[in-house]
Image (tube, helix red, strand yellow):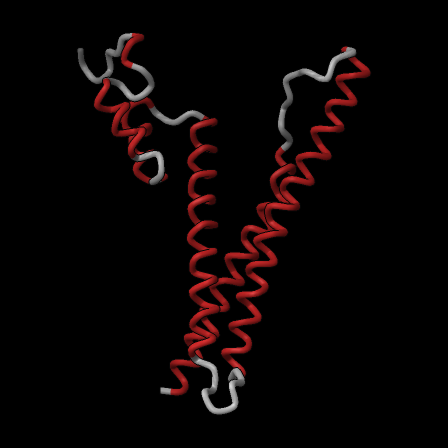
Length: 171
């Protein structure tokens, strides 16, 4: 059977080896996206799953980097009087802002989606006397969370930039 001729038993990734590879690559969004891209094209749902995997990975990595940055600021404090130089203090403040924006990112995303879903349930209750129904998700629904996602990444980068500036100017 050729790569374009797949039977129903082949599954979404082709053969059993493809399925095994896709499962093992599910933690790596780039490789998982390649596995589906090359074999069957990319659906809208698949594209959004890829975006979700990348943003989840970036958020997880960002948190680890944020904690590492805070540790770096602690190491770079003045050893005599235990104060922070100006650029280290700025970097630390930006890293703290990163963590606050990380919380806001998830809080705002959950809150906006919850409010919208409750609204849709009320509409369905009035129209169909049931909470169940299919929804068409409006484009604007993800924008508040996306705003905080971008802002937190900028705060993380700026925090490391301030630390790097301090290191570069004191050497």
